[in-house]
Length: 244
Ligand code: URA
Image 1 (cartoon, helix red, strand yellow):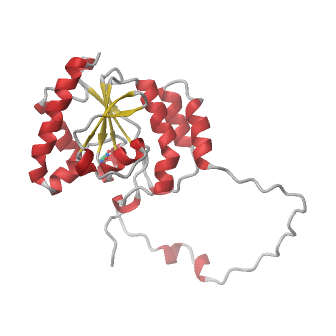
Image 2 (cartoon, helix red, strand yellow):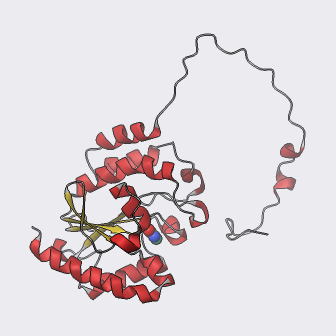
């Protein structure tokens, strides 16, 4: 039938509960339009920019994102997924958007792709929760809410959450950014280059070195690409030694 996810523990017969939707709606008398009502058009990106700029710390940024009402994604999500890892880390990873497990737990990258990410980090002796900033990472996503059925974030969604991500980067102030996957790279670099072309090539985001990498979910679908991911991890390790 196209249903792929259960949202309750037991079925609910909504027809028995509430017959109202089956009855014909009674037409409400139309209110006369207010002659001088101002037409207020809100620009979600400008509002996101203002809210993000006004957030003095991570807690305030999280609260601002939680209260930001211009994305319908919030309506279908269970939890805002803000971050995980060590806020003092030298490396900040920006992924795409929460999936089902992340939506349930409120933490980024904990499903299958996240477990692969943890193994990739372990291969270069790093851990998201390591107390040493040189051996830990801080993780967030472009979108804080799960898109339905894990669909790609739309251009509008990416544009309206970008200011929050930029503020997040400024507050964490990492030495190095990892743009994890196509959506993260295209949103933060504001370009359309294929991730398979630009992975492993140093770019700049918010005045700091940024390394686009293949997303672990892509690696799960294309295991042969793990060779490239390994090369990028070694590149990252080498760069860490030179960047102060
Ligand atoms: N993929 C992402 O990009 N982010 C997550 O948090 C989980 C999966």
